[in-house]
Length: 199
Image (tube, rainbow, N blue to C red; front, side, top):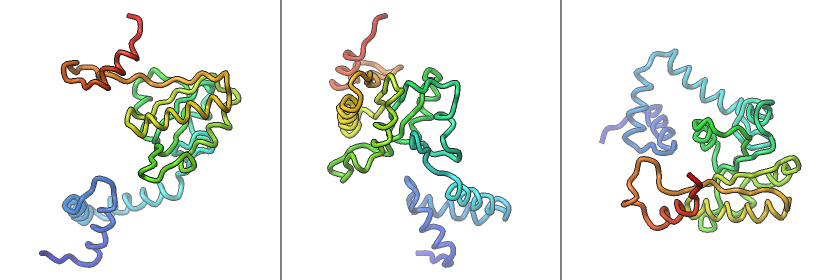
């Protein structure tokens, strides 16, 4: 097996810590960084330092931001009375791509997972419950996985306890556009039937 110089071994080891990066990919990335010019390598290092130094969580919604409150929470054009609860900050981009949602967000940073040791106290639920004063509706947009469903169920109960007249909705799930229902499993088809609307 080839032996690399210690700085290269260290870089490969650090890159392997990134999600989805195995040994071979880490090695390719490390050699790519080695071959880049000094300015590009320094720009990469500066971008990593800048992210760590300047990004934080929004005190209202827990989104990753460089300003507090974030651009969604501080926007005068967004409906502050409509809150969409998502699992991770990356989910916001997916919803924003639809261009059909104009409310604000709340990021949980995970889902309930008793097997994984994640209970309600590990999620960012407390500040969701404290911001319900002027909220009319909360949309639960967790994934349709076992953990996502458990999280949505738990939140629905807690939200109604905190504010009885609050409208709590769940995103529809079902057969994806462009697919054939012949290949849909019974859970997906059941959800599609439950989430049907007038045509």
